[in-house]
Image (spheres, rainbow, N blue to C red):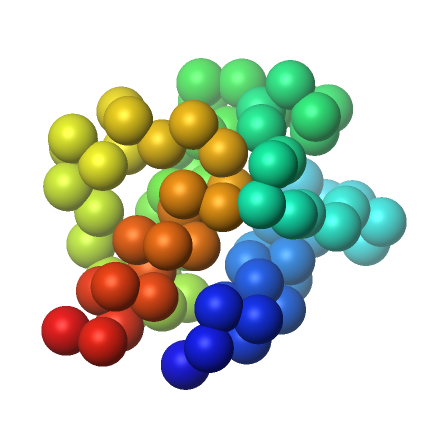
Length: 81
């Protein structure tokens, strides 16, 4: 799966989790860019992303993610195995 394909799926997950069809995430998107992205929603988001891509983030990965681009990089790496 390419990084671009990951972003297509990530946009769908973000739209579902935040119930907003207008969300478009990019490499630089952070929690401060999306209304309602607080610590509780972060847990829901991580779970939804893990389910979508059939992966598991480590606690270290979750804590160190600074933006959606870093999330996409981890997803691509995990999918390549």
